[in-house]
Image (cartoon, rainbow, N blue to C red; front, side, top):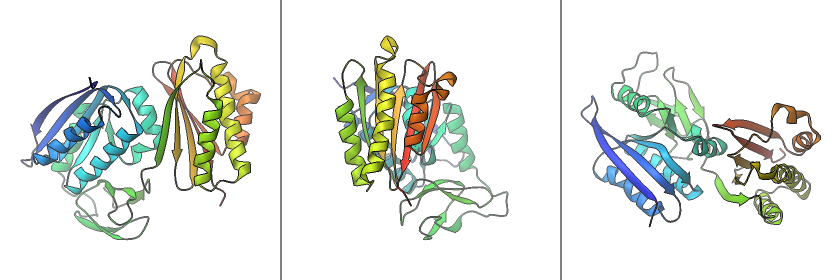
Length: 300
């Protein structure tokens, strides 16, 4: 039986339109992605183009689920509305942050904050020198765009995500949704060969040379070795490989412990990782986990 359920209700907005709030419970994966898409499309079919999705009871979302979510954000925005994400659990937030979805999605701590944002847009009246609706040049392709009010948008010409601010400033974010590979791995199994071959295949598709691929794998294997040597404190972890146009990102989502504490940052293992990649980001996940993000960029 599919482990996904929804509870939905609608609220009237000041401009006589409606906003729907959907509370999602369970998992979004291969077994549940079809009902998830049907659920998202239902509101549009009913004429509701503003949707708040409460993820507080979501346990897991696959890369396909994230891709579908971005697809429907675009559909709602094309229909003059938007999808707001509220109450994101730390484990889901880690994946969103890892992929950079904060640049494409409106995310809030509570339903109240998300609803307040939608209400503010419904009541929007320009209070600055920039009058909306307005025409802008896309910050990426310089195509002409017409924007109704400040917010986050997708260019119809090149698919770049960007924000238009109250002041009239326009800032570009992602050029497209990245390709994502993910796996939940057990520390009781030797996954090293699979990890190395998968990273090599993705790096070759991005035109990394053999030396850079060796450096990426050296950094990744060092992290894997540290994870596997923690004893029973880490039983499994989530590995995410993200291919973007000019860079490869490898993320480790660890739920059970802090792998890189302040004391670890001076150890040879950490320095070895830093020497083989361009950037390492560490984020704490509540209540006691850690997100590790390794980035390697293609040489200019």
